[in-house]
Amino acid sequence: MNDLLKALLVSGSLGALVGLERQWDEQTRNPDTPDVRVPAGLRTFTIVALLGTLAANFSNIYHPLVFAAGLLAVAIWLAAFVTAQRGERPGAGLTTASSAMMVYLVGGLVYAHQWREAVIVTIVLLVLLAGKSTIHGLSKKFTREDVRLALQFLAVSGVVLPMVPDKAFGPYDAINLHSIWMMVVLVSGLGFAGYVAVRVFGHSLGILLTGIAGGVASSTATTLSMSKISREEPEMARDCALAIGLSCTVMLWRVEVLVLAVSPTLALALIPDLALLSVPGLIQAALRIFRAGNTPKNQDSYRNPLSLKVALQFAALYAVVVVLIQAANAHFGAAGLLVASFFSGLTDLAAISLSIANLLRSGGTILHFAAACIILATIANSLIKLGMALSFGDTTVRKNTSWVLGSTILLGAGILAVRLALAG
Image (cartoon, rainbow, N blue to C red):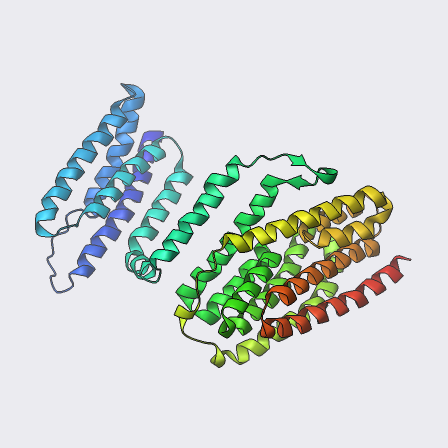
């Protein structure tokens, strides 16, 4: 089978999938009319996909503008189709017409041997089409203020970030505005993601997802965001404390995965240590889930936490700690690896963990000492998050986070002592 026939087969199949969805949607919308007329279904979309592939072939053989001319012709035909539909059902046909344009372009992608991209575009298109009712339902859960704050976040992440210079300056060349602003984006995005989760899934599940996602992204940012929310919304304090505890626990195993990629030996040695450090967070989660019936159900009491003020506070803290790290490295050198581990752990546990793993792999340190450095960095990370919770959280968050992170720190101190003793 030559390449053109293969492309026609693939594009026709992808077009048929989209057409089948459109046909199913039209028929299920009119269940009482078995002979309902489907304006554009399986056959139409298959033809459009084949047309895109053939037009791309003719564009390659005869003239480069054939594919563009075909796209224009399809657009004109679809415009006429939408106009005709408007008389029967105002607003109908726009989604189907847009989908047909996408299918034509998918046919071109297939001809260009970009089959993976064509399949991904088709899958995304099918998800959007099949999720119509879900998408419409979600949009009703958000207010005009939510949209305004979301646009504000997009401006912060998409417009400001690329314009900030990526150049170090200041004491020890530790200040990098691009890196700091990246943290602003992270904190803003994390807060808004938690709000979306609460709006969509409810308070308990939403906060649960926020804690897990926060552990993967930034447990420190989660701690700051949730602490601030607990003070503004006291009825959410227990759930905010749960999010903090979960994020700190998930963060431990994110470190394990990072170390595993560099030094499997060190990762294996850290498993019992990290498992023990996870116990307080798991106990807190079990207790909170057991008492889930006390969780408030009024979602309207949870305001959108997307706040540049909170994000800037975290960015300022991040900048100060980065300067402290560089100062420790400059004054203590390689002999102060423990000191550097402590200060690095205050702001970036991933960076110091990867550095230690690389050092062990290159023979620059021994296994137990490497594990001790990572445990010390974890203790420092827990200390800074405990300080945030005590400074910004309400009474409930301070109480719950104190025993969870306090227990983690004490367990970490015991593990550190054992590791240092084994290291000699």
